[in-house]
Image (cartoon, rainbow, N blue to C red; front, top):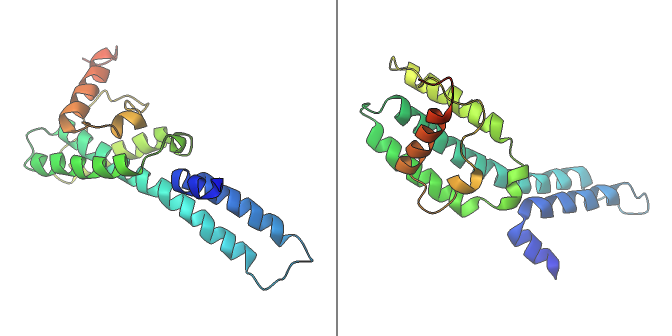
Length: 168
């Protein structure tokens, strides 16, 4: 009876376990070859991957909008950026689970968010704010917690920038 609980609470772990079991069964010659073992395993892997992708996407969009706002606070789009952070934060809060911390490459997520925000600002002649850290300045728990909004993100980012010795 632990399996439904695992599925509900740790879908990625559940999917990993199911895929391993299916692949193990697929190597047993005495079992029927009727099931398409490899494609069934890949479909179940996709269930776990989609959960990771959903959280990565929401947190990435949050970061992109925070970075654009921090870099261009007088831009005409700041009101929509604020709203978008709330929308994506609600998704992150709903879908983030602590076990995902080890499944997501947070430094890559941060680097990609900086690249995308910079490219988005560049379209309108803007640039990404200088002095941003190479490492992700937010924890996933912080980003998925109650009350994480544009103001809280900007305050946290300002603290990180102020603490950097090379930032003026």
